[in-house]
Every structure is written in structure tokens, then in C-alpha cells.
Length: 619
Image (cartoon, rainbow, N blue to C red; front, side, top):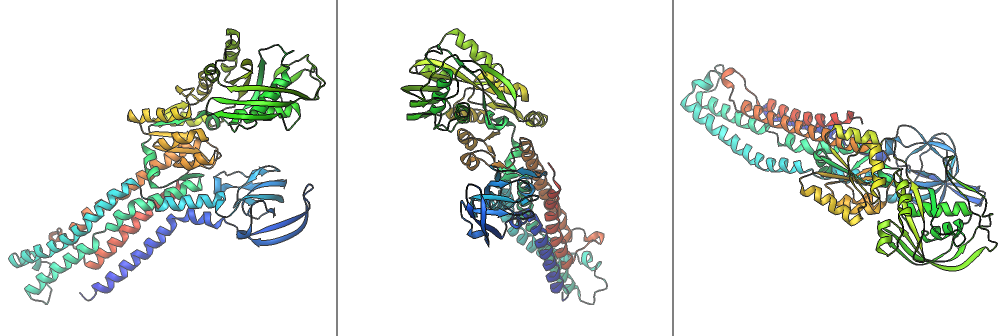
């Protein structure tokens, strides 16, 4: 036995060293993210803040950068923090953060991500998020938490390992006892393989029995079982992060492959989420309500709203009237998914000639032409208006009535896929505003791919059925739930789950967060609200719906790799343990303890290397 201890020590140490190298590679994606963090920044002071003339430049540690600091980023440098571009024009490489392979053009007003590389021009930026608040720091934190979290399948491995270790000790002891009994009762079984031994019969039996018992202890490998899941999870989450898919832990990574139903929100998810006003219609005589006054009242009423339609209406009114302040708003109440109520006073009037025809354009294409013969010399109409803006259901519940002609106008817009909101002033339906939001280019391809994967796709939106149907037809979605309030979205998800569906919800807004939390897998678009990102299990950094497909596919490949690792580890032990125990010694197949230890080390390394194959994953 003198050669066994040093051989055991050598092979076990070698195995641990190789395993450590391999495991370090499983977190290579995280190391790449950490390497993106810049060490310093160029802080500038301005002579003239309006003209952005630089007075002084100072190189400081990046940890000293404060919010609202003005920084200079030169070509080839990393952007020190999340910021807004004040001046300059450049291409920025964001590939290691968002997975976007092409450089992104950045000009004044655009946002830049800390850690991305400024390539061509000089940028003057204003810090927005610094330190642990930056996008890069949040990504690193999410990936770290994900890599140390356990997938549900890991619990099976833990339970198996808890039985495996005492079981192997018992099996090793049994091997010793069995071979002692066999050796003393059937010496020819052992002597035939030890005929050249200089020892006596008793010594041969004891030596053989101890050798097989030690070999069983050496070859049995709970490490391979224990490494099967966490190494695959580490590589899978790292690969996801490299491709702009942040998976918050092993559980969503494992569960995502079981999803059989995906529910998409409409606004900001299937569509760009930037609705624009494409048409207006006034239902009262323009002598009593000039078009621009109607626009000013509606825009002012939405000035406190954060809903995309409200923001679009306010910006449209400001642009048409060429003013910043549209009026005073009091008693503002917002009803999520329905509309707003408020009192509007001191509505600002435009000084532009009212009777000039106005053409509404989107991307240079004429959409609607509006004429108004009313003129007024006053700059402010000193009146107070009780305003309600919202869906037809919201206005009906507030006792606002209209005729069939209004319904026909609404249907005409909705059949074109437009979203229509009604505007009531002083309890009279005054007009409507129609919005359009274009569908994302990749939406149809993503839905088609999900269908090919056997996944049911559903559209869930608070918008009206006609608009929802128009969008669904463009992206080939068959099942639609329209005019659904945020609270009812949760009920719809729960109903699907009660029918035995594994549901993933894809959304981006505050009103989607309850449904994201309720779904088995919540997938948030990274450009969405913070609360939606917080509620989700998976965050897509890029605004690309094909990443929904990639997240499901990555989960399938990771779980498949975990199962392969488990199968290998189990087969290894099923074959290796009997081999080490001397079951095949009749065929001259025997393992010495040092051979068993080498095989054990090799099994652990091979499982880790198997997990590393996930690194070649491509979307």
C-alpha cells in the first residue's frame, strides 16, 4: 500500500486543480462584465453652461463621480457611468452589455450606458446613475445572485448526495466484509489473481479486501452529482448576460423551458410604445370650442399623466400651439387603465392664425388635415373646465352620452389599428383623439418562432378590441384579451395557470408588474419601468422580442445540459463502483485505489467541461 497514499494525493489534488480551472471559466462572462467597469473619469467645469464651453479638465477616480457631474469621454475610452449626452456625436459599442453587435450612434439628448466604449467622437455627458446604481452594476449584481442561487433540480441532487455519501461508506464496508468472507471460504477466487504474491494466504485476502474497499471510497463521486446543476446554471446565466438576457437565478432558468403559454402586453412590448397623435375630431360646434382650444384643454389635462397616450397628447399640443405651459390643472385624478379627471383653468391660446389649415404628419407623411375658421385675439381664455379623458367605458360610467355617429367615427379609427380616447368637457362629449403605435419589426418573427416551438401566444391589453385585433393580425396572434384592467390581468394569468398552463408574461409598464409577478415566468423589457424590471424573473436588456425566444431556447439547452451531466454522473457511479468493488475481477479487470482516485477526479472535471459547452450557445 505504500504507493497508494502519494498516488491518491497526487490525483485528487490534480483533479481539484483542473476542476478549479474549469469552474473559473464557468463565471468568465461575469468576469468580462466586471472588467468593463472603468477606473477613472474626466470631470470638466464649464465656462458657459449654455454654450457648453469647457474651462478645466480633471481626471478623477470613477467612484468619486456624482450625479449631474459633467464628464468628457474621449474616443477609445469607456463611458464611466450611465449618462445623458450634452453635446457631441459618436458611435458607441454596447455589445458586451446589451449584446447588440453594431455600434450605436449617440448624439445630444441620447442616453449612454456606463462601461460601453466610445469609438469615434468626443462626447460631453451628464451623469445620471453612478456607483451601484449604474446599469452595469445592476447587471453584475443580478448575475452574481443568479449564479449562487439553486435551481429546483439541484434539490434532487442535494437529496441524492445526502444519501449517497453514507451509502458509499456502507457499501465500502460491505465490500471489505464480503471479500473477507469470500477470500477465506473460496481462496481460489483471489489467489488466481495474486499467484505471484510473496505473502501468505491470509495477507493476500486482507490486502485484496482493503484494496477494493478503498477503491470504492475513491471512485464514488458525489462531486459529479453536485456539480451537474450549479456549473450549468453559472454558464447559462453568464451566456444569457453576454447576449443581453438577464436571468434572475437558477429557478427561472430551469422553469422557462416548461413554458407552454406566453402572454404579451401590447403597448411598449409588441409595439414601440411611443404612440403619436394621428387624428382629432370635435363633436361640438367650433364656434363654441375652437380646435386649438380643445387641443390646449386636452393637453393640459394630460400634463400630470405618465401614461404614454397622455404624454403623447401633451407633447402634441405643446408642439402645435408652440407653448410649454398649456394651462393650470387642479383636482387631478388618474384611473389606471381607464382615464383621467381634472379641472383645467387659464388655458393658453396660440397666437398663430386659427383659420390656417393644419396638416398632421408622421415621419413626413400627411395623415389628417384640419381647418378652423375661428379667430380670437385674446391670449388666454379665462374659463374653468371640468375635463374627463379616457376610454368609452370610462366615460359611459361617468354618464357621458353620445350618438351613433360618434360610434361610427371611433370604429373607423379602431379598424385601422388606432387607439381612440374620448374627451368630455363640462360633462359634454367634446371630441376624440386617435393615436397610432407601430408594431415592432421583429414581433411577427418572434411570434412565428414561438408557434413553431409549440407555445401558445396570447395578446393581453387594456386597449379596445378593434385596436388589439389589428395588432394581433399583424403579428399572427390568434387569442386576444382586450379592455383588461391591470387588476384583471392578474386574474387572466391566474385563470390560465388554473387550467394547467405554465405561463410567461412579457411586459414593460407599471400596469404589467402585478401580472409579471403572478406569471410562472415574468419577462420584462429592459427599456420599461423599474417596477416591471423588479417584478420580472428575466430582463431583456435589448428592446428585441427575439430575445424572448432566445431566453426560452437557452433554458431548454441549459436544462438539457444539466440532464446530460446527471446521466453521466449516475452512469459513471453505476459502472465505476462495481468495477472498483472487484465485481469484474474474474475477467482480470481491477482498479487500484490510485486508479479509482484518478477516475473520480476525471469525472468531476468532465462534468464541468460538459457545462462549459454552453458557452458556444448563439442566439
